Image (cartoon, rainbow, N blue to C red):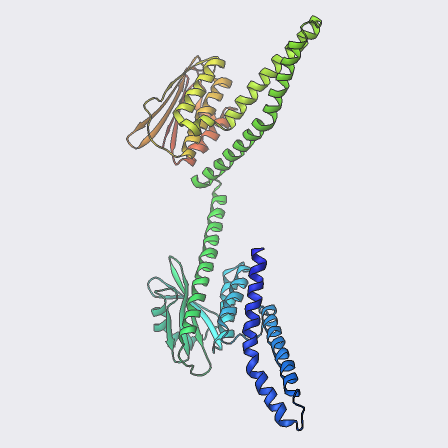
Amino acid sequence: MATKIYDIEFILGRVRYYSLLAVLPTIVLVAITTLIKEDNPTFYPVKLSIFIYITMLVVFYIKEILDFRFRFKRFSEKYNYQDSIFKYTQSIRKASKLDQVISELKEVITDVLLVSRASYVEVNKDGDIVSVDIQMKGSDYLLYEKEIRKASHEIGKIVEVDRGFVINVGETDERSFVMVCLSMLNTPKLNRDEISWLKTLSFYTNISLENFLKIEELMSHLQKIKSEGSNPAWLTKVLFSIEEKQRSNLAKDLHDSVLQDLISLKRQCELALAELQAAPAVFTDQLQDMNSSMTNIIKTTRETCQELRPQLLYDLGLVKALQKLAAQYNETAPFDVRLNAGNFTKSIDIDTQLNLYRIVQELLTNAGKHSNAMHVLIMLVCIKDKIVLHYEDDGIGFDQNELYSNHQSMGLSGIAERVKALNGTHSIETSKGNGFKFVVEI
């Protein structure tokens, strides 16, 4: 409703505006018609005035509609600053290359101003011209070299010359982009509106140039990474963040759907057991087995949700989450877990906490599958500005030369990737029959 009222107010405002505009043409036309026509009845000027007035009002309003409808058409835009900026911003949105942005800028400048030719040059931070537009004549480059250097120090800087002007339309850390806009004849000096319009264009262009150059830099960096065959720490960290988000969503879905349905089913089973005291023993035993199985499924599902998204870590921090994880393994695993992290008080971000938790989780999983250990020691301490995570067990160990040729290497490679994502380092000490030691420093 607010939008409709606003539209009505806008329309009424335009009608009042064009009503005033139509007064003068109406008087002129009526006066001319009255002077030309002789022996007119007294009511004729009044009727003619009303007819011409309404006609002029409609003509003006139709003109407004047509101006709006055809504002994107490629007709001359001389001195139409507002519409040209709008058209320019719409065109560079569709650009996919840096050259397209420069081409659109050339076109809009030559369309609006008294400029017959626009070219660009690239200037480095030392003021040296490193690249010249193909369409630029050598004489133009030599005549205005001083002005080009002068304009290259500031975005939107305009230096007027005898046949036009020079303007800085964008810059990066290494170079500036300067447009040389010239006319066939000597042109008048730029007025205030033209200078403001050119500065606005330069700032829009600079944003586009920065975006395209950043994209090109990112693409070349990714190509280099691809050729080297290794992911950088920031990319690994992003991948692990995405993985944690997927884990969190899956845990929430399991908790809100499967787990709740199982709990409801278990309660129904308990009610059935309570009401069937007189039922045959075989039927009662079957219900009790079903109830026991559902209890185990609920417990497993709840533990899976906690592993996918350790809520305790988000609520109380890393140390409490590790203490609970160690307690769970002490209840179910064939080895004893001793955790020493009580003195760890360093404040770290949630991503680092999650990765450290996943590292300990994976080490304990590997210990349960492969180590045959009896005792596991985990220490989390802060030494000066470094975080040190120390894992040690008394299991069977393995030959380090065979690290990447056995099935255990998959878990360790995942841990190494997490350490890399944290910009940390790790070391491994192990041999057959002498346990396994893994130390992380961040």
